[in-house]
Image 1 (cartoon, helix red, strand yellow):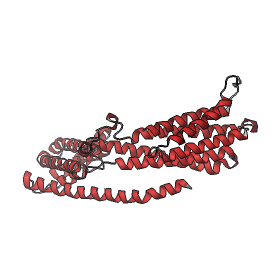
Image 2: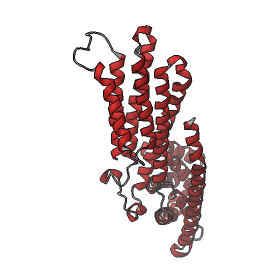
Image 3: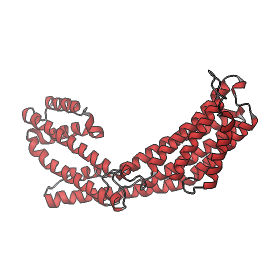
Length: 365
């Protein structure tokens, strides 16, 4: 069971890396909150800058660009909430009607989608400012806005300068795991071409796992790409702000796209075989030599997939090309088409040719 073994080798490293990143994030949060408190209290001169360390925590997200986005949303929500509290405080004060009015308006404004996860900050700030500021809400909230500005600035600075997060290795590991899962799925499919009796017990399990691994790989690569944006460390190490600027430097997204294409062709081969099995037994590729030859081809492709692109093997790839051509020769020759009839053999050969092309792309990149 190669798939299970493959995951088994990755899991200890994944767990260690998780706690390493968690420790770095914790250190940054502590540093950001402490520095924000000191700056707001001793440099700005506010005696109780409670919002400074709280806002600083929002600048410490797993990616720099996410930190910037959430900080801007938090700041916008705070300012909007304060702006709502000032006129209500002057006119009504912290009364029952005043509370009802400020919450009604704040909850409606919080529905603005651009605020995202920080939308509750509008109602919180508005109610907080009204209750503690009363009729002098403006005098109460202005120092707090300064504290928030200090906290957000310090948090973003700490996140960008102290262990600025890059999740490239996580994306690369996820792509490598998908490649192993795809190779295992192709191997299972090769066995079912020869003996499709136990179809759902082997191929179905591998296909289901492959879909789950693909989703995780796509998420990991997108997170890794996001971590490159606005990240000073990316430039220090020679990475672009976006991977498309220099594809060779950060190859995981391109490899993932190729693997997803290969996954699609592999699943299509399985669907073709399943469709043929769903009809009459005569619809199945009855030629024993073809079945064994096609199974051997899939095993060869699975072996190539398992070892590429770290160890490209010219001879193995040339052997796969030869096996594909030998299988194609009697079935794709002129005069072999039958009008109006669907030929699962030709469809499987077409898909394996596309699969071979995708593996060739991985081999080159």
